[in-house]
Length: 550
Ligand SMILES: Nc1ncnc2c1ncn2[C@@H]1O[C@H](COP(=O)(O)OP(=O)(O)OP(=O)(O)O)[C@@H](O)[C@H]1O
Ligand SMILES: [Mg+2]
Image 1 (cartoon, rainbow, N blue to C red):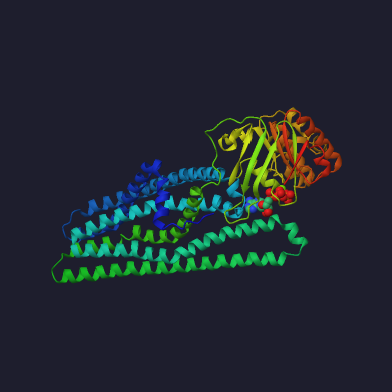
Image 2 (cartoon, protein in one colour):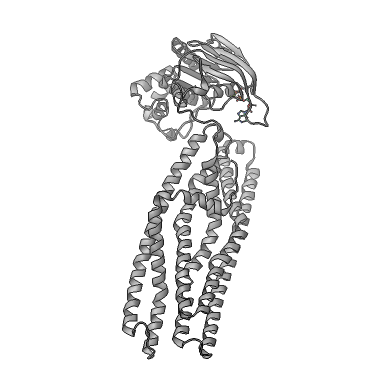
């Protein structure tokens, strides 16, 4: 996947762009957060007012009033904190659902061409952990930033009203704790954050590979080598993690030092001003309490920046996927499929600009209602040709038409409805055999499923299974033979009942008995269907009414 490496601001803007429908909730969360934090800050300040009036220094609030306000603030603070969090989580989970939806839509858009070579582990980690981590951005990043800014402005104003110089000091201290330290930390950690996320995705890919290829690993004694590869990935991940943790510790320390120093400087300044008669004791006292108790919201920002690196790295990857251009756009506005001869004219195709052409100026005519066989040595582009006919990829030059209608104008959905394509490998879902056949037609009745299975020479095998068509594939321990898998793929195609059937090596794993049953079915179907058959087997090619050599 193309890595656009956007700046942090761009990623944030992209992520915030998705929040529009929930802006109201966002404002509510920020409002409650600000009010809650101000309550928390003014609890000790109220204590200060109470103390001052107890000492006989007349203040804005009497001891009793200050006491009542203190209790009210405490209660309101708790309530506001709860509702703020509830709001944030509501937004976050709503958004996560939407982002998941968008990611799945993107995958659908990109499939199959762009997903063929994708590292699946990376995709899995994106769909799960990456999206999950974005919750942190929405619930614990956006509103804390807004809350810190607003609360700090309020506090600067309050302290400045008591004493201008102390107000300026507060402003500087907030900027250092809430902006300078997090920004420096963010800069230092951004590479480590990205490395951590990437490493995590790669580790997923390696683990998945090892699980899938367990048989080969054992057979060829690759255990140590594969283990070494996994350990190497693990170490890389650990290095990135350690660096992130180190930065986190450094940042907490610097934040604490900055807060302590600001408090100390404020105290000294206030003391000097009071002793020189430039400030009353009460004002100096209140300003110092207000300043010392007001670092909560900005300090929260410093921990935000630790996660921010990782969150932005995730956001970047998710945005990459969402913005990735598909190789082949689905045609939604176009003409219907017309059953007729298939004409491929002067096709030239390569899988990438820099790659060798698989087809060069290839022309073929596949007549309607006939069985056309395609012959050619391995790697010459037979499967590729079928994929081009299915418009999984687009030709570089030349054209394909069905019944005289250009493939580039036919609605993609229509095309797939009228053609069944049995690929070289059949993918089976974790479901029952019956449902795996029904992939070809979800509305099929049991009778139709049985009929399709009979045509594919699969029915007798299914009837011997413990629960017949309801047997879960996992019950069989994924132990279906290559031929059985193939026959499920063929049964799917028969059940789909299309105008055309494209079969890529449908009989490569079958014994001659099963093969002959399927060939007989195909011949019968071919009376009204167009069949395209790729095979290296002479016996299978025997049913072809015309043969194209590639
Ligand atoms: N997604 C892909 N990206 C890049 N190259 C590919 C891709 N798929 C296939 N190829 C390459 O294109 C060439 C043709 O592949 P294709 O699968 O069409 O061959 P084939 O004629 O079907 O071979 P076989 O008889 O072995 O199935 C091969 O060299 C293959 O490595
Ligand atoms: Mg092939």
